[in-house]
Image (cartoon, rainbow, N blue to C red; front, side, top):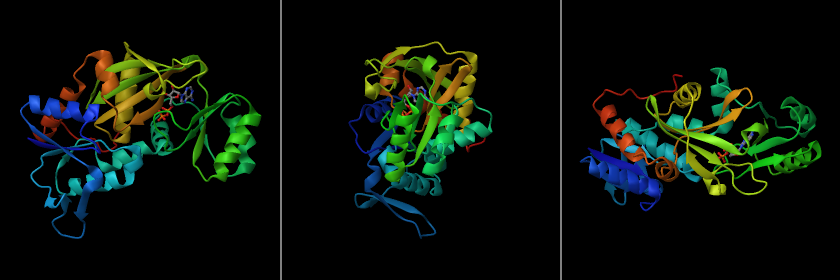
Length: 302
Ligand code: ADP
């Protein structure tokens, strides 16, 4: 097989590991810089070009589309879909996953447990919004933040009001969320490939006063046993968003597991180093099954 890895850099851990795993299994894998792809969208035969030549003959694409390039990255993936190339995650699912509010709305509609979450536009509604999510302490989040940036814990109504006023003033879209204190600064990252959670790790915030467990924020990861309920919830959530491969983050609350986020381009470094599982190899195996038709692609079916 000839596999394209859409990634901005070939030396990133995840990109390197995917190339290594593909090569080990006898395939050719190339890193294609998403932002240097250009396309003819009007032709009856859609094409995509890269550094002066047409990208042709690829059997499969692994999109590793970063948050800052979602719009363009999704357009490139869409073009490849129209060319009939097998895309590990499709463009619609990638765009859905990037929008936290949209993802939570879809999950909630299907009965997946979530922290109570509110969304508003007007300053006049702030008091009621705060009350709706159970009052302070509460969490305020940018709709399109990643790696814990733009996730703020506010302890009082007064602080919540000031922070919300500031963000509304800056025209940033934010949501307000119940703070799951009992999670104790920890969450569980479930790595879903197809119909399985192939690896899971617990991430624990490790700095004083830090409640975010992100490894980029200094969180510490350890392997973890997940429950059947958590496993099913992670798989269902990935499928509701329409992702074949996803990093599903779960917090353990007093009322059971709750979904925090579903990530369309989960990093491989933390999960592979923590669990010792060949996650990249599992992804390549999934593509092999996808190409030979034994694995069905997800289309947000839940
Ligand atoms: P990002 O996409 O930037 O990682 P998340 O919404 O996943 O943002 O939040 C980052 C981390 O902050 C989570 O992994 C979790 O540890 C913590 N966190 C976020 N929201 C809450 C919440 N409502 N209650 C408790 N902890 C939270």
